[in-house]
Amino acid sequence: MFMRKTCKIVPKLSFYEIESYLKRHGSLSTFVIEDGRVYDLVRNLTRTTPSSSKDEYDERWEDFYLPLRRSGREISIPFTIVLYRDNFFCVFFRLGTLEIRKGDRKTQDIYSGIFREALRFQRMIERTAGAIVKKTVPYDFRTGRITGKYVLSRMMSQKEKEKRLNNYRQHLQKELTVRGCSLKEYLGTAALCYRKAFRKGAAKLTPRQMHDEWAEKRVGGMLFIKYPDSRRAFSRWYNRNGWTGAHPFEIVFR
Image 1 (tube, rainbow, N blue to C red):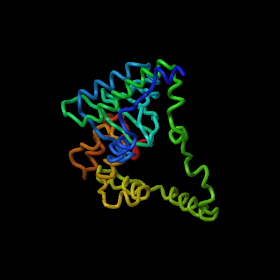
Image 2 (cartoon, rainbow, N blue to C red; image 1 turned 60 degrees about the horizontal axis):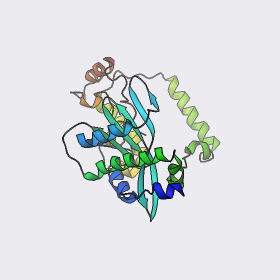
Image 3 (tube, one colour; image 1 turned 180 degrees about the vertical axis):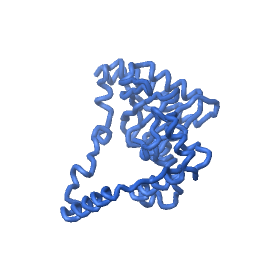
Image 4 (cartoon, one colour; image 1 turned 90 degrees about the vertical axis):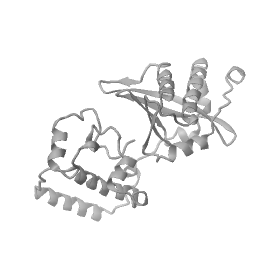
Protein backbone atom coordinates (compact mmCIF):
# COMPACT_ATOMS: atom_id res chain seq x y z
CA MET A 1 0.00 0.00 0.00
CA PHE A 2 2.87 2.35 0.82
CA MET A 3 4.38 1.97 -2.64
CA ARG A 4 1.08 2.60 -4.39
CA LYS A 5 0.50 5.88 -2.55
CA THR A 6 3.99 7.35 -2.67
CA CYS A 7 5.67 5.79 -5.72
CA LYS A 8 3.24 5.70 -8.60
CA ILE A 9 5.56 5.73 -11.58
CA VAL A 10 3.51 7.41 -14.34
CA PRO A 11 6.16 6.87 -17.05
CA LYS A 12 6.52 9.67 -19.59
CA LEU A 13 7.98 7.47 -22.34
CA SER A 14 6.65 4.52 -24.31
CA PHE A 15 8.59 1.27 -24.58
CA TYR A 16 7.79 0.95 -28.27
CA GLU A 17 8.99 4.49 -28.95
CA ILE A 18 12.28 3.84 -27.17
CA GLU A 19 12.64 0.49 -28.91
CA SER A 20 12.16 2.19 -32.28
CA TYR A 21 14.75 4.90 -31.59
CA LEU A 22 17.38 2.47 -30.31
CA LYS A 23 16.88 -0.33 -32.81
CA ARG A 24 16.82 1.94 -35.84
CA HIS A 25 20.60 2.17 -35.36
CA GLY A 26 20.93 -1.62 -35.12
CA SER A 27 20.70 -3.55 -31.88
CA LEU A 28 24.42 -4.40 -32.03
CA SER A 29 25.68 -0.98 -33.09
CA THR A 30 26.35 2.20 -31.15
CA PHE A 31 24.62 5.53 -31.80
CA VAL A 32 26.87 8.48 -30.96
CA ILE A 33 25.41 11.58 -29.27
CA GLU A 34 27.57 14.68 -28.84
CA ASP A 35 25.26 16.79 -26.71
CA GLY A 36 26.48 18.39 -23.47
CA ARG A 37 22.96 18.42 -22.00
CA VAL A 38 22.60 14.66 -22.35
CA TYR A 39 26.18 14.11 -21.15
CA ASP A 40 25.48 16.06 -17.93
CA LEU A 41 22.33 14.04 -17.28
CA VAL A 42 24.21 10.75 -17.63
CA ARG A 43 27.01 12.02 -15.40
CA ASN A 44 24.47 13.08 -12.76
CA LEU A 45 22.87 9.65 -12.93
CA THR A 46 26.18 7.89 -12.27
CA ARG A 47 26.70 10.10 -9.25
CA THR A 48 23.59 8.70 -7.56
CA THR A 49 25.19 5.33 -6.83
CA PRO A 50 28.66 3.77 -6.44
CA SER A 51 30.06 2.07 -9.54
CA SER A 52 29.92 -1.72 -9.85
CA SER A 53 33.54 -2.02 -11.01
CA LYS A 54 36.49 0.16 -11.95
CA ASP A 55 39.93 -0.45 -13.40
CA GLU A 56 42.62 1.56 -15.17
CA TYR A 57 40.59 1.65 -18.38
CA ASP A 58 36.92 2.10 -17.54
CA GLU A 59 34.28 2.40 -14.82
CA ARG A 60 30.97 0.50 -14.91
CA TRP A 61 27.51 0.91 -13.35
CA GLU A 62 25.26 -2.15 -13.72
CA ASP A 63 22.04 -1.23 -11.93
CA PHE A 64 20.07 1.51 -13.65
CA TYR A 65 16.47 1.23 -14.85
CA LEU A 66 14.28 3.19 -17.23
CA PRO A 67 10.51 3.42 -16.47
CA LEU A 68 8.26 2.99 -19.51
CA ARG A 69 4.68 2.38 -20.59
CA ARG A 70 4.08 -0.88 -22.46
CA SER A 71 0.67 -2.21 -23.51
CA GLY A 72 -1.10 -0.32 -20.75
CA ARG A 73 1.33 -1.40 -18.02
CA GLU A 74 4.08 0.38 -16.11
CA ILE A 75 7.42 -1.39 -16.52
CA SER A 76 11.12 -0.66 -16.08
CA ILE A 77 14.00 -2.00 -18.17
CA PRO A 78 17.63 -2.42 -17.04
CA PHE A 79 20.61 -0.70 -18.58
CA THR A 80 24.33 -0.42 -17.92
CA ILE A 81 26.60 2.64 -18.12
CA VAL A 82 30.33 2.40 -18.86
CA LEU A 83 32.67 5.39 -18.63
CA TYR A 84 35.63 5.06 -20.99
CA ARG A 85 38.01 7.93 -21.81
CA ASP A 86 35.45 10.55 -20.70
CA ASN A 87 32.72 9.05 -22.92
CA PHE A 88 29.67 7.23 -21.56
CA PHE A 89 28.42 4.01 -23.19
CA CYS A 90 24.81 3.29 -22.20
CA VAL A 91 23.88 -0.32 -23.00
CA PHE A 92 20.15 -1.07 -23.00
CA PHE A 93 19.48 -4.79 -22.62
CA ARG A 94 18.39 -6.29 -25.99
CA LEU A 95 17.69 -2.84 -27.49
CA GLY A 96 20.92 -1.05 -28.34
CA THR A 97 23.76 1.19 -27.17
CA LEU A 98 24.20 4.96 -26.95
CA GLU A 99 27.65 6.56 -26.79
CA ILE A 100 27.35 9.94 -25.06
CA ARG A 101 30.11 12.50 -25.63
CA LYS A 102 30.59 16.13 -24.63
CA GLY A 103 29.66 18.51 -27.43
CA ASP A 104 27.26 21.11 -28.71
CA ARG A 105 25.34 19.08 -31.30
CA LYS A 106 21.79 19.29 -30.01
CA THR A 107 20.02 15.97 -30.39
CA GLN A 108 16.36 14.98 -30.19
CA ASP A 109 14.68 15.56 -26.84
CA ILE A 110 13.82 11.91 -26.44
CA TYR A 111 17.44 11.11 -25.57
CA SER A 112 17.61 13.64 -22.75
CA GLY A 113 14.16 12.40 -21.71
CA ILE A 114 15.53 8.88 -21.26
CA PHE A 115 18.01 9.99 -18.62
CA ARG A 116 15.66 12.44 -16.90
CA GLU A 117 13.26 9.56 -16.44
CA ALA A 118 16.05 7.29 -15.22
CA LEU A 119 17.08 9.93 -12.66
CA ARG A 120 13.49 10.27 -11.47
CA PHE A 121 13.11 6.52 -11.21
CA GLN A 122 16.41 6.20 -9.35
CA ARG A 123 14.93 8.27 -6.52
CA MET A 124 11.93 5.92 -6.42
CA ILE A 125 14.26 2.93 -6.21
CA GLU A 126 16.03 4.49 -3.25
CA ARG A 127 12.74 5.34 -1.49
CA THR A 128 11.47 1.77 -1.82
CA ALA A 129 14.82 0.07 -1.13
CA GLY A 130 14.64 -1.55 -4.57
CA ALA A 131 11.17 -3.06 -4.12
CA ILE A 132 9.76 -1.08 -7.04
CA VAL A 133 12.22 -2.77 -9.42
CA LYS A 134 11.03 -6.23 -8.40
CA LYS A 135 7.47 -5.23 -9.30
CA THR A 136 8.17 -3.52 -12.62
CA VAL A 137 10.90 -5.39 -14.54
CA PRO A 138 8.93 -7.63 -16.98
CA TYR A 139 9.57 -11.32 -17.33
CA ASP A 140 11.12 -11.05 -20.81
CA PHE A 141 13.80 -8.73 -19.36
CA ARG A 142 14.56 -11.10 -16.47
CA THR A 143 15.34 -14.15 -18.58
CA GLY A 144 18.68 -14.91 -20.17
CA ARG A 145 19.67 -16.49 -23.46
CA ILE A 146 21.54 -19.77 -23.75
CA THR A 147 24.29 -20.03 -26.34
CA GLY A 148 23.28 -22.47 -29.05
CA LYS A 149 26.35 -24.68 -28.61
CA TYR A 150 25.06 -25.75 -25.18
CA VAL A 151 21.64 -26.91 -26.34
CA LEU A 152 22.06 -27.74 -30.03
CA SER A 153 24.84 -30.33 -29.81
CA ARG A 154 23.05 -32.64 -32.27
CA MET A 155 22.75 -30.13 -35.10
CA MET A 156 25.98 -31.49 -36.62
CA SER A 157 26.50 -35.23 -36.93
CA GLN A 158 29.48 -36.82 -35.23
CA LYS A 159 30.84 -37.80 -38.65
CA GLU A 160 30.66 -34.23 -39.95
CA LYS A 161 32.18 -32.88 -36.75
CA GLU A 162 35.14 -35.28 -36.97
CA LYS A 163 35.64 -34.41 -40.64
CA ARG A 164 35.90 -30.71 -39.86
CA LEU A 165 38.26 -31.28 -36.95
CA ASN A 166 40.47 -33.44 -39.14
CA ASN A 167 40.56 -30.75 -41.84
CA TYR A 168 41.57 -28.23 -39.19
CA ARG A 169 44.39 -30.48 -37.89
CA GLN A 170 45.71 -30.90 -41.43
CA HIS A 171 45.57 -27.14 -41.94
CA LEU A 172 47.66 -26.57 -38.79
CA GLN A 173 50.30 -29.01 -40.00
CA LYS A 174 50.96 -26.84 -43.05
CA GLU A 175 52.27 -24.12 -40.70
CA LEU A 176 51.24 -21.41 -43.13
CA THR A 177 52.37 -17.87 -42.43
CA VAL A 178 51.34 -14.46 -43.72
CA ARG A 179 53.78 -11.61 -44.16
CA GLY A 180 51.80 -8.82 -42.60
CA CYS A 181 48.25 -7.60 -42.99
CA SER A 182 46.75 -4.34 -44.21
CA LEU A 183 43.66 -2.65 -42.81
CA LYS A 184 41.80 -3.53 -46.00
CA GLU A 185 42.77 -7.19 -45.66
CA TYR A 186 41.75 -7.26 -41.99
CA LEU A 187 38.32 -5.78 -42.72
CA GLY A 188 37.91 -8.23 -45.60
CA THR A 189 38.60 -11.16 -43.29
CA ALA A 190 36.16 -9.83 -40.68
CA ALA A 191 33.59 -9.45 -43.48
CA LEU A 192 33.66 -13.24 -44.01
CA CYS A 193 32.46 -13.66 -40.42
CA TYR A 194 29.81 -10.96 -40.78
CA ARG A 195 28.38 -12.53 -43.93
CA LYS A 196 28.15 -15.90 -42.23
CA ALA A 197 26.66 -14.55 -39.00
CA PHE A 198 24.28 -11.88 -40.30
CA ARG A 199 23.59 -13.16 -43.83
CA LYS A 200 20.93 -10.85 -45.36
CA GLY A 201 21.85 -8.02 -42.99
CA ALA A 202 25.40 -8.01 -44.36
CA ALA A 203 24.63 -8.84 -47.99
CA LYS A 204 24.64 -5.28 -49.38
CA LEU A 205 27.28 -3.79 -47.07
CA THR A 206 30.96 -3.17 -47.73
CA PRO A 207 33.50 -4.61 -45.25
CA ARG A 208 33.91 -1.16 -43.67
CA GLN A 209 30.14 -0.70 -43.39
CA MET A 210 29.82 -4.10 -41.71
CA HIS A 211 32.50 -3.12 -39.21
CA ASP A 212 30.75 0.19 -38.52
CA GLU A 213 27.47 -1.66 -37.97
CA TRP A 214 28.55 -4.42 -35.59
CA ALA A 215 32.08 -3.97 -34.23
CA GLU A 216 33.28 -2.48 -30.96
CA LYS A 217 33.80 1.27 -31.49
CA ARG A 218 36.93 1.56 -29.33
CA VAL A 219 39.41 0.61 -32.04
CA GLY A 220 42.45 2.56 -30.86
CA GLY A 221 42.81 4.52 -34.09
CA MET A 222 42.84 1.46 -36.36
CA LEU A 223 40.23 2.83 -38.75
CA PHE A 224 42.24 6.03 -39.22
CA ILE A 225 45.32 4.33 -40.67
CA LYS A 226 46.25 6.63 -43.54
CA TYR A 227 47.04 3.95 -46.11
CA PRO A 228 44.48 1.12 -45.76
CA ASP A 229 46.19 -0.97 -48.48
CA SER A 230 49.59 -0.82 -46.76
CA ARG A 231 50.73 -3.74 -44.62
CA ARG A 232 53.58 -1.59 -43.33
CA ALA A 233 51.15 1.11 -42.13
CA PHE A 234 49.03 -1.49 -40.33
CA SER A 235 52.13 -3.02 -38.74
CA ARG A 236 53.33 0.40 -37.51
CA TRP A 237 49.95 1.09 -35.94
CA TYR A 238 49.85 -2.36 -34.31
CA ASN A 239 53.40 -2.29 -32.90
CA ARG A 240 53.09 1.18 -31.38
CA ASN A 241 50.64 -0.28 -28.82
CA GLY A 242 48.62 2.94 -28.89
CA TRP A 243 45.51 0.77 -28.90
CA THR A 244 46.18 -0.76 -25.47
CA GLY A 245 42.92 -0.72 -23.52
CA ALA A 246 40.84 -0.52 -26.68
CA HIS A 247 39.17 -3.45 -28.48
CA PRO A 248 40.10 -3.16 -32.18
CA PHE A 249 39.65 -6.89 -32.89
CA GLU A 250 36.26 -7.31 -31.22
CA ILE A 251 34.23 -7.60 -34.41
CA VAL A 252 30.86 -7.90 -32.64
CA PHE A 253 30.25 -5.60 -29.68
CA ARG A 254 27.91 -6.85 -26.93
